[in-house]
Length: 313
Image (tube, rainbow, N blue to C red; front, side, top):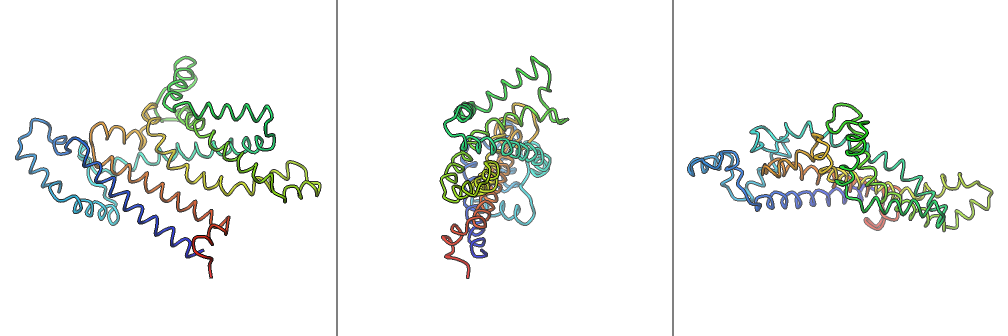
């Protein structure tokens, strides 16, 4: 198990450096100049050159990348915001908890609702309940999140006036954004749970459990659900970073000052350092969740661990 974890961590570190370099270099290929953004379009050319030297933007790309990563790893310094002239981390440290609160809440609610529904769809395969649930989930998958967010705002905030339109002051402000995220994430978890449960229901040990006289509730909980949790657990880990990236538009629509809202504003304002930091944080979360899912998968299923390391001595 130790060799398996070391290999996964090593692959994650290599992937992080590769993706971080791509992010750093691609943003510098975008149109626009951060120095011109800071100084304004009417500034003189010699002043622009002085600002480039001051912020180190006149040096080769590899030198800038090396310094950027060094400052992040050893000092937690993502640079300064070209728009607001303050440290990028000062902007991010208040936004990250808000985004994580939204995404974790969405993931937990979606999982709690979707797993029982998927399990019942597998048990009652081809029944009316199964068809209705699967078809509704397919409809939810096809609905764009931004359209659903606007629809919920029009119905529950504008027309019925049950919930606030935007903001994040109280728990009521989170109902519509979380509902939007839950509806969008239910479909994949329901289909995954149903697929895994159907595979387990065909196994011989399930037939043996029924032959022993166990009731349906016990068989579904102790045998079917337990053996289906391997893939479902991995899906939970992997859904967190995708939820964060999916909330980029939702946060903007509902006026929630999370990392997604900050990232959109920074893209519009060409605030490169903030955009780089946001993408890097999402990348780090993705890699961490990927490593954790691989480790959990290796613990739950020794065959995966053996296939990677050849078995622990």
